[in-house]
Length: 341
Length: 53
Image 1 (cartoon, rainbow over the protein chains, first blue to last red):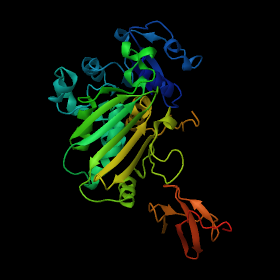
Image 2 (cartoon, chains in turn orange, red; image 1 turned 180 degrees about the vertical axis):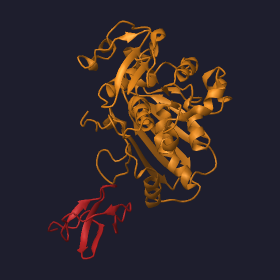
Image 3 (cartoon, chains in turn yellow, brown; image 1 turned 180 degrees about the horizontal axis):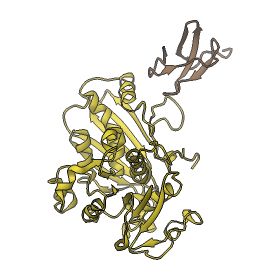
Image 4 (tube, rainbow over the protein chains, first blue to last red; image 1 turned 90 degrees about the vertical axis):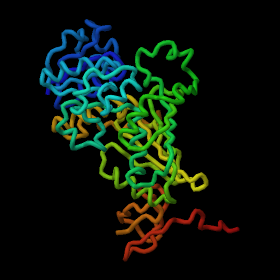
């Protein structure tokens, strides 16, 4: 299958290429980047040296492919996706531009009305654990945000079981610096970023809308940057609608994810990594979910951990692509991570 | 089916012997084989020895 990557010079673009050049059923035919047009992809992604002979081409030269992964910044896909759809190929958009079903949400969270609200019903939210069957026939796949993925996968079993009580669910998320992208600006300079525990979005983070859309419960999201390159840990504080215990939580999470290839339930009695931890998930397409009961505060704490560039972006995109293309869902995504790292 | 008493994961007898202690594959709790026929387990005591005290 011939695929193209639009916006291939960023961190997510690099992860897409790393996965796709070794995918047994894929030929990467084009990678675009206006800022790096003409340069070898290994200039932006040195881990691909002597692996891929591809060079970046300008966006304007994009040709037709069987599938196109769009990894441009939020806002750019809104205009690009209709052209790609018209060409007849599958579109996998890694930006936020087609994630929200309700067009009214775009001015609130993305600062502008959606220019093509008629296309939003054609888009499927790219979380196979929730939308596997719809993804098999999707015209547009909207790959979720990294914090949203960790939060939704952690929270969803509690909602399904009816255990979330009244009031907003508080999500406290920490993320590594690569989540800011390759052009993070002054806030991403080593002198400014190193050592921080920065509350960069105590309220109003854009992923709030996605989490509410996919879980159906009101969410209060606070986001922090921490001293890591990769990784997201979402700590979800849900008011308990009724008393629950560990065994009931195990049952609920097993019911949700017992057969999922990329979700691991982690809540162990002993050891260093007793609860989900993004550190050991770097480079993998795994999301670890866990839980703990707090009877004192009548809350349930759920945890979601992942690599923001993998299950939170490129890995999730390839998982969706595999489903849509009819390949085994895990193709090209079998890396188990490193320990120690 | 034998279940972990802590997390209710299915516990399978892979050449275990009576009295053997092994971790649950899901929650990591140390389990002790109490009987083989029928196969039954319990949460292993944290400290079962008195070490001569």
